[in-house]
Image 1 (spheres, rainbow, N blue to C red):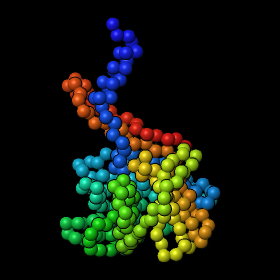
Image 2 (cartoon, one colour):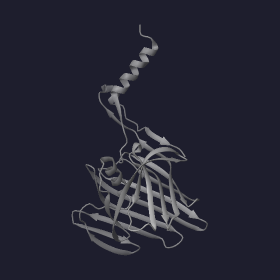
Image 3 (cartoon, rainbow, N blue to C red):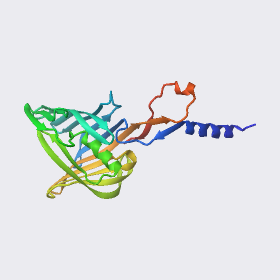
Length: 263
């Protein structure tokens, strides 16, 4: 007769053969929350949310609520895009800003079939040709992560921002261990390429977390201006069924937490 420990080992092996937990990718449904500081002063928090796509369309969200003394800045951004293999294509972009100073809305419609991009920023309209690979300021982060996963060397991106076409280039500095309040991470350090050193931006991405950024620092004339650190994150578990009995396969699959960290 089998002992209880032997039965438990057999059950565990059977379960592992039935379900394979996939590692997260940059497009795995996820949330990430960050602490935003101005130097050493806490400004508030920012949150990124990527749910499951709907009818093939991804809806990536960014929400932030920052304040410094009597100054406030609240932003809500939504990016809609599609995916073909490892390439993302933008559809619509919406940013709403409220707080001290002018409130405004920014909207961009990417009409790829017609070959044009239509924009509206602070009540000013713009129109640009849709040529080559182009992104909005939010979903370009996910394209960057996909390119890091695939080992792409040329990290150059053209995006529409503030009724203008901008090009950004990034340089991989190397690997670095990053220790912050939410944990210790093996990261790749990246620098934004600029013509001079008056402005410098560095960020650290964790390969084990599908290159999720864990920290960003921005310097103006050598003085730290922004310091953004990961507070917590989670990826929805992706489960692939290899060989499942019919009675188990008919049961609904409930998304589970794949990885979390709390600050």
